[in-house]
Length: 285
Image (cartoon, rainbow, N blue to C red; front, side, top):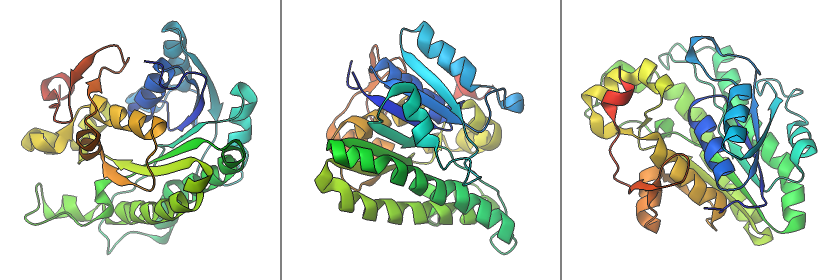
């Protein structure tokens, strides 16, 4: 434990799901974590708020604060890093987790839908990276982690679920493909300054409560496509603490390649390795 002692981190989309889990784990590793989302309060019936996550981290002995910013609005996000640093000091870690998806066949996706997905999934991560990089480069150290998606490439044949399920993610996947390309180029630009930029994606489905609601049937029919939240979080910690440059990698592949054990979400105990199976019964209820 203590891999992030003395460090400050900003995690976007941190009110629930993967972002919330990464924030809690970075705090358990010793970081002061600033959580960001578009709203402070409850997100409908999906559950989870920034306030609740801050309280959970503080009850566990960690340090956390919250900043509200709508990443769809370029003006609202224009000073997000400055706001975060006003609560904790210079940022050492930026986790671009927030994403926005609209599902529809590629022949039917609208210009508005494509623009909004591109705004949140590409332009916002780039803007935040550009905000945080000057300080990181000056100090000679920093980590920028971007959450990607296996949807950046066309699923192989035969399709695991249905043709429609394979195609409705096309526009979303295109934004993630653009993110990959941009961040790999950025990574090689700033690596010499001690800043490490990477992209992390699940093998397919990270089994959060939100994912279970929308694609639980796919996970149930294809258990090998689902991975525990702990696997994704462990891979995120690896990318937020070690010296990797311009990797676009899946969580399981990364953990297997570096032989890193998977710990519980509080970081207190080892629960498996890169091949840890998802507990479908616990989530798909």
